[in-house]
Length: 212
Image (cartoon, rainbow, N blue to C red; front, side, top):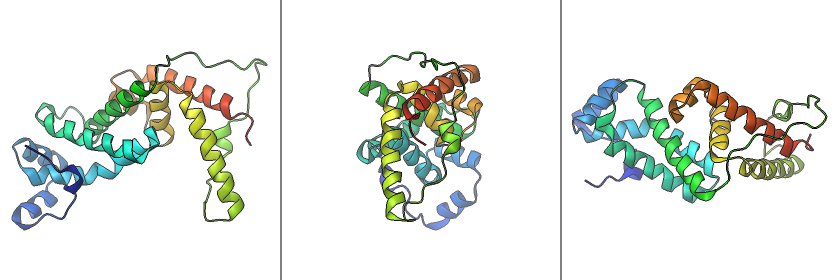
């Protein structure tokens, strides 16, 4: 059965639509598992922007991100019968999304995870991320240019991370997820996620240490 993922967010009609819109998420999932197409379309509508934003943040390319976005919902559709309500559907769909994006990053990189370089002076360095204020592109041309330059440096620094480090860093700092939730999505422990985040943050600070 072919699924037009990009068209699933379209307005639904009739009694089936009203039932879908009123149903809570668990009901929607059960209906979708029973073959109710509008129920699955409503689930897609609820999370399509979040999944696309995640993919855009992780792969930094709109074409690749949209391909991964499609792949995520196709996998969800094909594996919906395996959802056992042991976590929220949000967590489940994000788990699929992170795995799809992580596989993509691994295919593009053969770098192995390594310990972040230590500060040779052993002194605490200012937290680059805590120092940054929100950049408003429309504020003025100078700030717009600086914002673009900063973005280029950040993207270059992200490219220096291993796929898993980058995934954890993005989920924490761009998606705002808790370490426990990230661990659930990646199928690992909170402590492992914490270690990956520590390495990623040290590497990012080392790469961006000259910027203020």
